[in-house]
Length: 234
Image 1 (cartoon, rainbow, N blue to C red):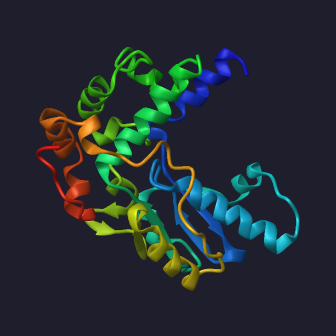
Image 2: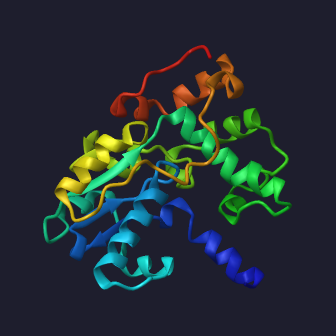
């Protein structure tokens, strides 16, 4: 991959150019809105397994792109034909830690460069930053300029305070949410969500009162609409 192509791949991730990423698979009766860092990898793999079972072929992961469509949030409810739609969300504190582990900590440990998704923010992000610096950088970027991995989850699943999908499942209660997805689609049960970055979160190991306050303000809409408890002390 050339430097120029890498640059344009990064530029295309600029929020103004982004739409909702929707997995639309008619054969499986699936319309899934992908919310980064909230079990989206689990949803993709479940859909891929479902497709492989139907065609009895070991389809590559790249085959999923055939079923991806990008739409504006306000366009989602009007997509035809009508179909059960869903998305999963995650506790905002844990999601931000997952983002840091995935986009900062992991490439630093592997000796790689910072992801191109951060290039548009200049020097605001670096692989040398610790978690508090990462939280402060994210807190300073509003949703209209936020890259999708740290944009508010309600931007993907709500419009003007109203849900865009039939089911908003929680990663923390994945089994129950996925059971409803299976009941309404042709997807198969999954024992648990996988590909979740890092071990279970111990809040006190990552946050102090100051950082909690920044997250509470930055993701106020997520706490209000998704019902996650607001914490003021670890």
